[in-house]
Length: 497
Image 1 (cartoon, rainbow, N blue to C red):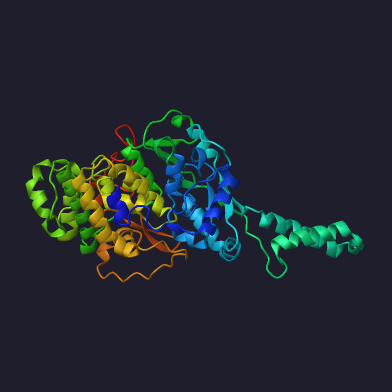
Image 2 (tube, one colour):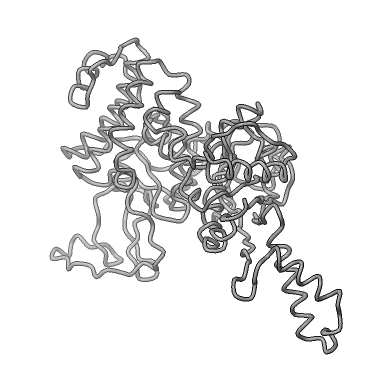
């Protein structure tokens, strides 16, 4: 793993704690949360205050996240907000912490100037023993205070000030006045400098959890769905009808299509899209060559073709399927016939522009693991797990490639691969260009489009192209997604009639 560390691909951008004052503040917060102190004089922490060095000292990487539930956090500085979250069991945890820090940044800046802020992400459950517990997590509450309870005392002082101002004989209450003076010594002037953190609650709707081998929960979808990597005990007892595992490739494809959660990377002949597909092909070639014992020394993007010629007969089906897509995207010609049963199918998809796009891309990277770049970007815990089992030649190549090709421009790489970030604004319909050849118009007055997503329709004044199409004929049949294909061998027999 040291290749990743040296290239800034693991434990990168952590907040460094190297002063005696900050170390002592951290120790006080640690003792306040878990009743332990550590002996290190220098260490690094993530956005939650977790330190891999302290985890090593304690022999417990979950010392701030017992049972992988109700994560505790320690804030020494608001600068922690740009750090990653290590060892997360829920995909939403980092975004919750980042939003909480952003919304309370001024108050946290003032508080952390003199003391650490300690808190917890409170789930509605205290442990996760079986899959049913995942559906009991409906809300995440963020609670925080300093070790010396500045916020609680400030709230108590506000209440006493209110009593003093609104009670007629409060001037004669020596006990009340003495308590106010003592509290003010510790909290400061809360009238001029109010100390208060916004208590924040977050709805836990769609998310990924590392529990039970990895489970994707889409509870807020039109058709609530759970997708698990493995068929675990208790999975099919959940009160959700659509329960899928990674073996149900047709079911996953149907779900992503019906909910409009994914799109083809290549929708028409396009050089940029073709380049993305070609890179995926190169990654598969690298993976296969490393498995077959090639040392990959001196391999660059320009001479990867040498590997493809050398091991052409030994490439997996994913390689040949994506080659069909690449030829279509770069040279035109026949549209590839590929359904969910083909190993390359999910390599050709990406999340569409919606609020849960990152979660969908995480799922797709889980289903297309030979694309090591997407796996690193979208699912780092799974990337690190896979990395440990790779040959040294592949480890060396991947670490150098990611450092040179991705780390230098993360935002640009993400936009090129997954498209621009989803806009929060309502979509505005764009005027359609007039169509000269009226024979090409359909019954709905829209032009027929030659792409694998089917025929466009109008919804709320916006032209929408449904994923994979809804009717038989045209590109749907040409792609092999005709009658009954998506619904499995015993379903969808009347589909399209």
